Image (cartoon, rainbow, N blue to C red; front, side, top):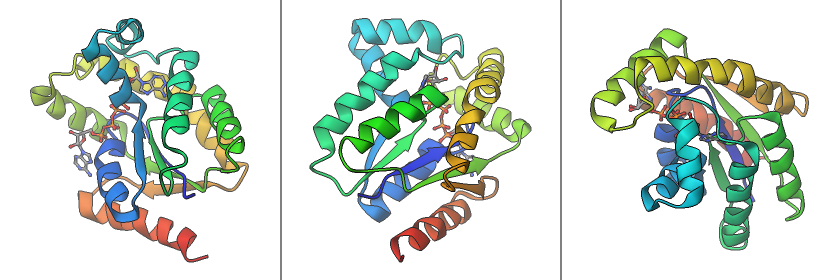
Length: 193
Ligand code: B4P
């Protein structure tokens, strides 16, 4: 199995680049942001709880997202070549839980692709998306909170994977195709070993 994490702050291009990578490598895309928004749209208890956090730009509690990932791994692990985790893990506790869940399936993370984008560019992209996305969290105040949460709780996840030599930093500024090429070069190096 080829399991990749697309990592980076809100607006760094995780969702955008996942779309290309799943096609290129035949991987299953798991975005916790998308899963939470689906739950919210269904009006489930989990979705309504998650919404309270998301609309304030806060991370949803670990046990909620870990439970969702567990269910998806159970559903798809036997059926796919691997996964792209997009927006997960966002805390060190989530990273440790993911390692355990994959271990139970004799699998592991091959690489964490970390998109590097300046705060100014993140703000520009997300405010632009907010004009059409209809997302309650794409407004200036909430974006600032999301970026703060990223630095406080999510950045340590990069260090967690760096200690296992699994972290690759990728320049996430520039046109989308150029960034896809940089990501593919990293993945091709893994698959040609
Ligand atoms: P997500 O859905 O993961 O939202 P995101 O980080 O804002 O999106 P992403 O980074 O994928 O967007 P992209 O850059 O592709 O999370 C939303 C919320 O859900 C979180 O705040 C949290 O509350 C909750 N949540 C999710 N996962 C969680 C977890 N594991 N634990 C706890 N809580 C969790 O796109 C941004 C924009 O940039 C787009 O408009 C795109 O077109 C544009 N763009 C992309 N690449 C570009 C480029 N190279 N140049 C110009 N524009 C570009």
